[in-house]
Every structure is written in structure tokens, then in C-alpha cells.
Length: 205
Image (cartoon, rainbow, N blue to C red; front, side, top):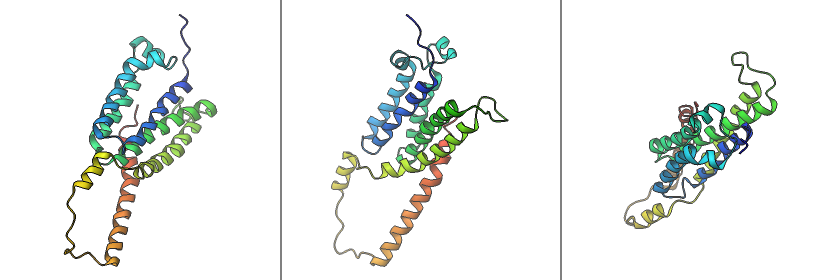
């Protein structure tokens, strides 16, 4: 059987495509999200080389599997373990990992004639693609999944909560409005800074 030639573009498409599952982080129950992340590790080691031909580099062909693809799934699993109560952080780091690294390779392959002075394997086009696309994805995707409906488990939990007694005095509208504004401001800035900070720890391969 003739070997399929290696294609960097095909590899990066496979690298970016799983980001679609990030939109299910706030829809699927957590046990299913963790199961899918473990499945992605199995896919990277055993299934990808049989399903998507031409995405293994020469060293990976000699090894028999792609360490980078396995590391991709391991990084997502680690993000879920560390930030399973803050799925917007997982989504932001995942977006930077998938779209940032993927767009850097695509831009570098298409427009990477000039190389960086300090790295002969990287180009200014790839660097700009990583910064622009990765930053936009890192900030926009968390806000996108925050507008998704909650899981059925969380809905049932809310329905089972006891209602407050009408005897409890509610805060004045002005006080409640200011409290909501402060909470929204803190949440927005937490998302803004925690996503890039967390993603930087995982986007190293």
C-alpha cells in the first residue's frame, strides 16, 4: 500500500476540529465531558493514524503514534480536572490551544517566507496569526458558552431548591442593581485574565 504523504494543513484541521466540543461543556453532564476527554486521548494514540492518513510526522511514524495528539487530549483532561467548576476557563484555554496553534501553522505555511531572527522554523506570519486569532478565540468562546443553556442536572438542582420565604426582606432595587453590576464586572475581568493565564500553561507542545 502506498504511504499517504504528510500534510501539515490536514494535521492542523484535525487539530482545530475538536474545538466544536467546547460548546458542549455547559450542556453535557460533567461525567460525559470527562469521558469524551479520555476518549480523545485514546483517539490520538490508536485511532487517528488509521482514520486520518498523512497527519503523522516521520518520528511519529517510527514510534507508531503521535505524542502531540495524545498530549492534546491530556491537556484538555487536565484543564477539566483543574477548572471543572469554571468551564469558561476550560473553553478559553482550549480555544487558544486549538485555534492559536492551528492558525499559527496555517498562516506560517501559507505566508511564512520570512523567518524570525531568533527561530529559523517560525515566521512572523505564524506569530501574528497565533496572537490575533488565538486572542480573539480565547476571549469570545467563553462568552459564547456562558450563554448556552444549563445542563439538565443543574436545572433539576435549581428546581429542588427551597423557595425563600416572602417574609425575608429583599434589598432595595438600587442596592441589588449595584451588586449585580459589581458581580458582572468581577466575572468579566476574571474571565479576561484567567483564560490566557491558564492557557499559557498548556499551550507548550
